[in-house]
Image (cartoon, rainbow, N blue to C red; front, side, top):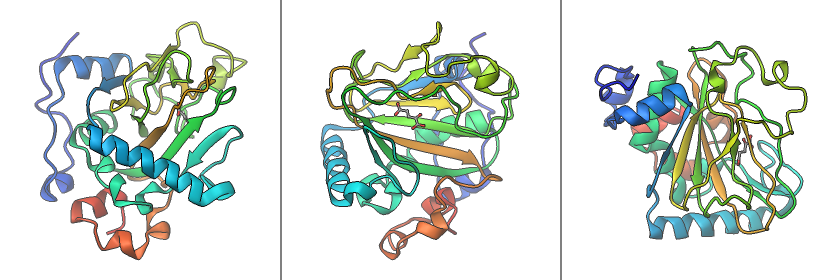
Length: 262
Ligand SMILES: O=C(O)CCC(=O)C(=O)O
């Protein structure tokens, strides 16, 4: 059933006290999030910011060389980046985007913090991952859920350049993915791909089965993963440990709370 605009959803009072202005999700967006587990926002990244994010992605990858991504994970044939909170002012607006934080509140329904901010680009012939969720917790249908992820799409996601695949509605499948399918690399009959224009942001419940996919045509497929986790859990990137002085000096109180570096 499609509900009215979310009027009385969960709101973290600390976020509000720190100046966060919630974004009113539409009834359709709420329906998609509740039933399918994901929503896509178009035209979130304007042309100038997009160009800056693409340049930052390439510059950081080049500067870090074989160390790129190592704070979190490296993957053969994939240009991975990690700890982007500390690698440029250009990333600051990502993890504070009101629409994104409003979706996270809607799904997690309790205080949360940034899990990690990473980059991911599969190269031609690479990128296929196991279908997975973003939490070690087994899924309990209907929640509580533990993580929310978002794909900040820097190049058009097309059917052939390895767009993220996800299986809508699997946040209702109890337990773990491996209990439901033997070969998690295989195509799932109900999987869909996030086909979207550069500048879009796809946000999904981290308990929805998903994965990166094989880049068949070798066209650019840069994306940033901005993930959040319920506040009682550990972050993928411990922001207190990684926080650099130059990042600390520019953070607002709201950013400090979201990063959990107060
Ligand atoms: O970039 C993607 O398509 C998703 C990647 C992903 O789920 C992961 O790296 O865990």
